[in-house]
Image 1 (cartoon, rainbow, N blue to C red):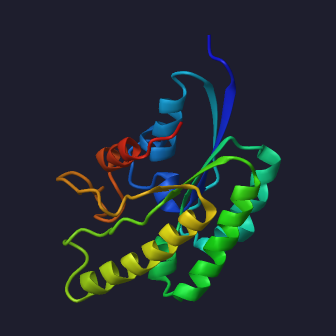
Image 2: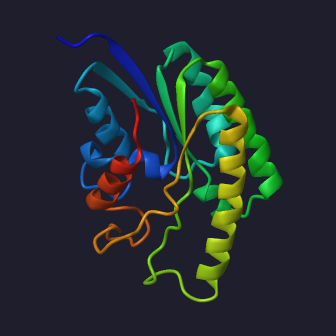
Length: 188
């Protein structure tokens, strides 16, 4: 007999929405909800939208969170901020505001770092070096905010990307890539 219903909210962009997976059930939020469902009933609410940046999470996704009364929230945002050349200061301001609001929700918060994304087939020199540098800068902000808020920080940047990690677009993860991420995210 399952004891309770856990409400799990996923916030983010295309990576949280599961773009690149063959089926939504192969996305990391769905896989995490499946892990949680072994002992509890789980209601997954994925508010992620492809293309969203931190400011979009702040204005479009976050306002829906409090009424849903979540038990668990994952926050995975920033890749589009990098690609849209947002300043580190602007990102930090928006990201901090999101984290503070989530902390006040009383839910258990999991903040995910940004992975380096883009296979060598689509990101060439010197852009791969610049992208990696920016990803590390944004991750330093994400890690600092997670530490300041005393919430879980999940490092996706350091994970290997074995053969088959990328979907056909060579940017978003494949089913296998999302499964690798879900293994690295220990929700409880």
